[in-house]
Length: 358
Ligand SMILES: Nc1ncnc2c1ncn2[C@@H]1O[C@H](COP(=O)(O)OP(=O)(O)OP(=O)(O)O)[C@@H](O)[C@H]1O
Image (cartoon, rainbow, N blue to C red; front, side, top):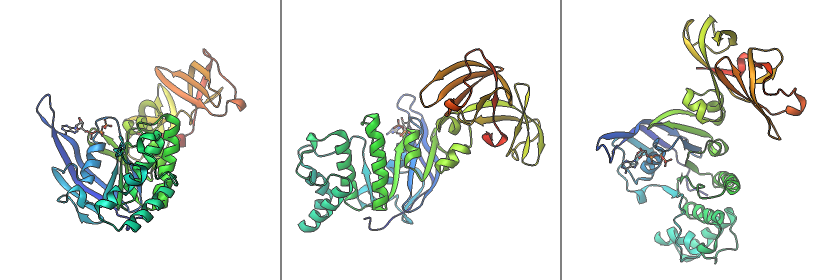
């Protein structure tokens, strides 16, 4: 449906703001280098205040970078006003026109572009079909549910056939169930429309569900860019490991090394590890162990004492102490495993491939 899918590139982009309290300048975004391929769905993910929205607003043209250059479809766009950029934004607040019906809300951008009436009608109907609002053209937007309003906002952005669609936390105002339904819809519609999408969220499951690639931001800096699998299994640091899913951090030192494999000492116990080429013997290291990758067994890698054991229906939730380290364990197959109770002595079991070493 898009005229042409466009890629987006940020080269050494920074944005400086003044802190209203201290009056000191600070980098809201610092030296961002991002390359988004045409047709890709990318999320900007990170905690509040990390600079996600600032990046999105710079791409849209509502803010201009203090350093660096932004390219859209290979062309530099820093000097272009928002209406000259081939982008459309879907806002958190929907920003619909309250006294207009669905048709007129969606047609608005096309009327501004002075398209012939028949073409407008054709395009609006095609988009309403795509977002699942066919036949509802005459409904006023204040008579719609949150999910329907979100669909209208999406249709209104899509109808102008932008090269890039920008989303600023578009599902924040919806309840949990609807958020999940709508995010699946957004992904379906983006793929059907064949459009490049950049999506701001602080919800990691939303980012995992939607993205080809996730850009994880930390205090104005791009910390890691990768597909959901990479950021989950190969986080670059503890921040990413903690932000994407749950993690246990087992701290110790590397005591032996042979090429890529080695042995780490954790709480006085030897643990076989892999992919430690970046470390030397004697270095401190952190083993990132996902709760679902760890198992409780009678014999295993690290002796522990169970401090919490809770049946959650589809999984058994444990907390255990390995020396002074608390380890969370999720057993997704409790029906077929021995259940340990609080106070039991057991072992945390895992293989070298189950841990990611930082
Ligand atoms: N116009 C402005 N003037 C001064 N500081 C600003 C301005 N806009 C944003 N900031 C600050 O810049 C930093 C980054 O803000 P930004 O809105 O990009 O964060 P965010 O990651 O999108 O956060 P959230 O998830 O809360 O929306 C924050 O510290 C914010 O307070």
